[in-house]
Amino acid sequence: MGTLVIYFSQTGTTRAAAEKIAEIKKADLVEIKPERPYEMSYGKTVLTAMKEIFTKARPALAMEIPDVQKYDRILIGFPKLVPGF
Image 1 (spheres, rainbow, N blue to C red):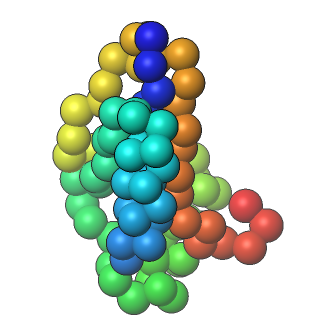
Image 2: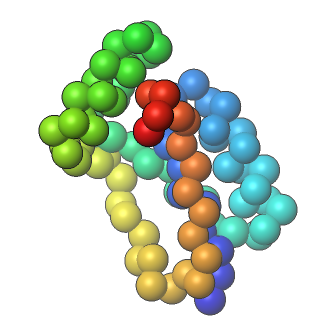
Image 3: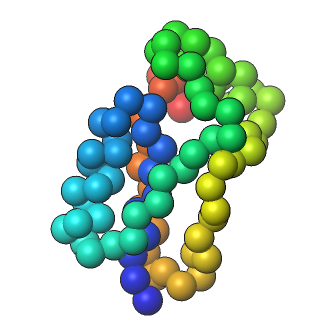
């Protein structure tokens, strides 16, 4: 069994942290990629994220989801876009 670091990064900050953690932990690394990329504008991204949260939307992904059963530890990294969530 091993460790998986799975992350979403809009600007690259979370990506850099996830890559460093994966390197230190000798973990597999997977980036979450939405089928339809988010706007680069922070304000528009926050509005989209809030809409998805409130409508319980699950955007389609443009990546393969790994078999998580082969991992005993999964670390998830993502930016905090909306205060309170």
